Amino acid sequence: MLYQEAGQFSTRYADDRRLFRLRQDRLGLALLLAFAFVVVPFLGNDYWFSAILIPFLVLSLAGLGLNLLTGYAGQLSLGSAAFMAVGAFAAYNFELRVPGLPLLASLALGGVVAGLVALLFGLPSLRIKGFYLIVSTLAAQFFVQWALTKFGWFSNDNPSGVISAPKLEILGADFGSPAGRYLLTLGVVAALFWLGHNLVRSELGRNWMAVRDMDTAAAVIGIPLAKTKLLAFALSGFFLGVAGSLWAFTYLGTVEPHGFDLNRSFQVLFIIIIGGLGSILGNFLGAAFIVLFPLLLSNLAGLLPAGLIDAGQLENLQKIVFGALIVAFLIKEPEGLARLWQRLRERARVWPLRY
Image 1: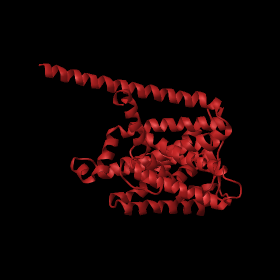
Image 2: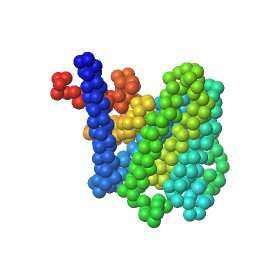
Image 3: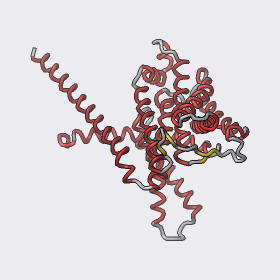
């Protein structure tokens, strides 16, 4: 009887601790969002908004799009930049050719078109996987870039294929300033991360993880493989398409098809590898690393004596150092920054008792 009561007490204690931690996490998230929406617009300057915060947010969203496909569903892809390009050019044409269409609707429709294109290039996943699937999605990268360059209709017959951001206005409010573009980007990214968080916690998210871990066993227990994989491609393409629209409209202002080249796909891939596969938080951590670390290297290089290293060699040296640190980090912590952050939190919670 005493053992039973002790077990019940232990269970209640564990549940209370879990509930307390959940409330802590929710409170911390609410405070962080309040700081980002209310305080940062007053404290930040144009450089922080345009060069750091906006690309950080957009790349985090792009990382989420690829993470849904690769980190959660286990489907490899190197076509992220292609789907970003489809979203950007589709949203541009919706704004251009549908008078009175709200900006947010254009962003959403651009994401839908990107999702449909991703669904089309995801059809080979029903037959192939692994390296061969990477090659299949790589075809999307080259095909989309060729189509956007070849057919002038997509860029409104601009000779250089460049598209420009429409007027960033929502319900009469102008978001054209650096702070306004930051708030617009933050609002869209926050909403889509909320959606992504709910997706991975839903039945569909559990199906993705089952297919990722062992697709044969998933099929045996009744999970529809074709539907699950194609939904992963479609939803990943939607998130990447919206990210591409934000990249073109709120960050760059103007963009051409070559702005979404293979290097951009690798950049998004590095974000989820460094941040952590199958992690929502990892997308933010990986994007922060990708955006901030090159700036840190540039500032450190500025401390070197003038003329010691010429500009061309300095740029190559930065790439070498960046790549070497990525490799070293992956060897040391293959589960990404999200896992490292989780370990630090666990140690901090028991620090007075453990040490």
